[in-house]
Image (cartoon, rainbow, N blue to C red; front, side, top):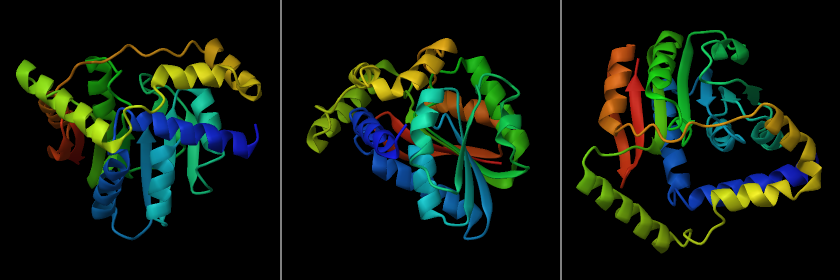
Length: 248
């Protein structure tokens, strides 16, 4: 595929993501700030879990010029789009995070300095997520961090409803509530003949998500502590949108 085609679709991807995360760029910046606080200004390795087309990976590499980033995702189509956008210090690899062998696909010697994720782990079953957290605790060096930016419930029905309302009203104020939605983006992409081979590859692998795991931010913290992280807490929040940090 031509680079211009990939760049156009990644730009549309970013716009449709902002329909659901109106402060997405600020959230990315917070993730980068946490990684920078943990790794300093020297050489470092960071793994981006469920990287999609590499939106966060690319921003990390631009902001931290001595960081090597490896993005991991199971979707060959999104990885194909990202390959034309992320730059030379980002490597994107195909692997299923629910498969315990996924770290081998990174070809990244350990221990890792950090791992990050953005709007990507909510589909993992709680047992699979707990296993993923244990893997990260084994791979990340002492003092390293895992940073997860995602929607996480507050654990009380009334508070969850209020958090939803806060996010919806923020989206309206930001003007992203009329952006293309998730389903519309995929529908439009299927009409682009240039992407047919990647769409075929995606269909052949029958990539599916199991839906929302429904875990609250407190439950994420408990899983991270049980996995072996020394500390875990949210450092940024807007409604139910959190940046959760765990320190190894």
